[in-house]
Image (cartoon, rainbow, N blue to C red):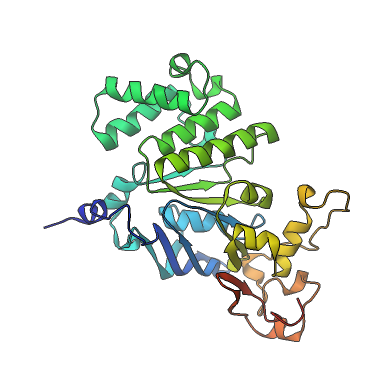
Length: 337
C-alpha cells in the first residue's frame, strides 16, 4: 500500500497540475476580541516552473498565508476553511510527520532575516550538509562536496573556507546566499520566499534576485515570492497576486498588471515606485491597513480609496475578470476606476 509520501513522489514533473493550489483559504486566529481572519477566502495558484509574486503592504496577511501553508501558525491559529493542494495532493490532510518529510526537500522556505533561521552555534556548511544527509541519504563527505559546489554556484567567495564559518562571521548578503543554498540544494518543487531581500542594500538585493531566478530556471522550481515591493516583482515574477487586508484584490501576469493596473490599491502601490515615476512626484496611499478587529464591512480598501462609492461600503466585491487571466475585486469595475 502506498503512503502519502509515495503518492507525492509518483507525481510527474511534466504534469500541468499546479505545484501549489490554494482555494478559499480562511485562516482564523482565536483572540480575546473574538475570531479574526488575517487570510480570508484566498485563491492562488503557483504553476510548475514559474515565479509567482504575492505583494501588499505589511499587515495585509501575506506572511500569515505562508505560515498557513507551512503549518507555522501561532497559538490559537487554525485553517477554518479552504484547501491547499501540493502537486495535486491534499496537503492539509497530511500528518505533521508527513509534512516534516517534505519540508527542506520538496518544499522549502527562505525568511526575511537569515539569522533567525541559521543556528548561531553551528557552522553554516554543516547546517546545509545536514539537509542533504537527511533527505538524500548521502554520506557526510558526498554532502560536503555538493554543498561546497552549491556555495560556489551562488557566488560565495572562497566556498571551502566559508563552509567552516559561523553565521555571525558572514555579511547579511552572504548569509542570505547560505539560506538560498540550503533552500535549493535538494532542488525542491516549491520554494516559498518571504521578503528574502528586505534587509539587504539595493546592490545585494539585485544580485540575490538574479541568483534566485537563475537557480529557479536551472532546477525548474516553482516559487511563491512574498514581498511588499512591486519593483522586486517586476524583476523576477511571471504572475502577480495583490493582497490587501486578507483578500486578493487583483491577479494577472506581470506584464498585464504593470501595463494595465486596475484596482485602486494596485495603482497606489505602482504610484509609489520611483523607477516607474521618474521626474514625477511620488504618490502615497492615504491611511493604513485596517486592524484585524476593525475590518470594514464592504470593500476593505474603501476607507482609503479615492474612488469609493456607496456600493463599495455596502457590499463585499467579488472577483471580476476584466480580460483573459486578469482578475480584479472592485465593484466599480469596469465603469469608473
